[in-house]
Image (tube, rainbow, N blue to C red; front, side, top):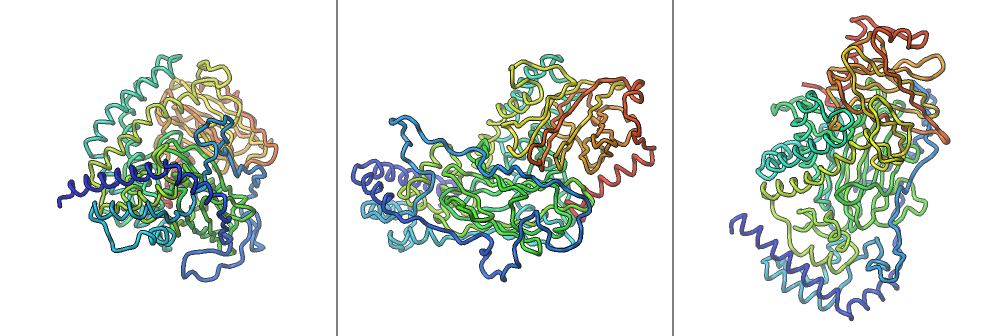
Length: 619
């Protein structure tokens, strides 16, 4: 049978399984039986995260919260610990009306139960599609519980913890995917949509200028690459750890050249973003290690995301992450609530991803963690999961909530590999969502959320929480329009924030070249004023001050300052002043540090070395 015929046949089998499941699930007898089973089912519990680990792992050293050091050696720099942790950012709201369809439906998937009618029809369906493994139908539920897949990422002393076999394979596959016809066609649509959004969002300044229009194709290419990574993550029954929202980079020992950028939507130059596909019908164990617990990243978070747009439902923050004495940790993730357990993430029925962020303030000494994920229980591998069925809005959560549907969609086995055209088509669908998302993120910089009116350039709003970012952060956003002889002077008062960053992004909300240019500064890289505030100068032309954030040659662009690791009651402020370079010296505070050409070169050299260490050894 040809590959196309096999694909069509299995799609047909999957449709049969879903149809059978819907028919049985809607029958009065089954509905009543399911209700009775749900009422009588005992509650389940999961082993404590601090005691669990991968099969065969050695006993873990004693675990301690991140905020408690395990040695007497003092940290290099004091860090304000976050006191305000959002463990549940947004919970699923219970339906208030009696006629709400999902009023009594739990987000927590139940273990598939045996059903005589389902078993008979399931066997027929399996034989019909040529997938009868001589396994009794009653064994399907047991197989669902015991199915285990894992992604192991080994790290050696000579390589970055990011440069794993899974990562390299994902990058190569993403590059092939973006070259498919559906993606190439969607790039044309995306380009038109991005340009239309920018003309509307930047209407106060006449739309995007020539410098930004020249960068439009690169922004579209990066969005396509990010979407190609996202497509791979949709198979949550075979989870892997994939870094994306990343700059162009080259891995040592690889002859494939530079990996294209996948940075989108106000990517942070200090943050390493990694993602893992998950579903609410499975159980996962995430393990990792910080090689130097004395020099941890400035911030680390694990977020549960739902749907295709990535709404956050839960966050495990750095101050709540419990580490062993050697810097290792174990996190469990499944449909059950934490109930006091450390390092646990609850997965709702519409969970699709776990996103991790390592934010590095000192690029020279802070490094990202190593990371692995293993699926330890859940339904068998299937075509449904392989094609991202668990991530389809409406359908995925419905299957997760129904043991019967979960069993039936698991009858159709996965293909040996997904045809490139199918990968490209799914990627194109994900890209299509980007048109509205890009407009939304542009509006973060251009529109006053209180009034809905466009705001003037060269103004940054007071730091506040924004629905488009993590709820554990504060953001101060705006956009600039500067001539070569102008500068935007920012006075930043962190006031209890252990970390902040001032990055320049273009109209498409994408960073510039932050390896070779100083297009961002954080509080570890910048020089503080005597009173603890920071004065940052944003300009196209180098003004000779240490705290210069280059626009990378742009005369128009966006800025979204992030404040993280917030102390309880933290209230950062940002003030802006537009000045000419001729008047800059009279605007800056006493004691402002200036740099020579050699000093600037040293700053850039330090940036390059820190950037390269993420992909070490850099080729």
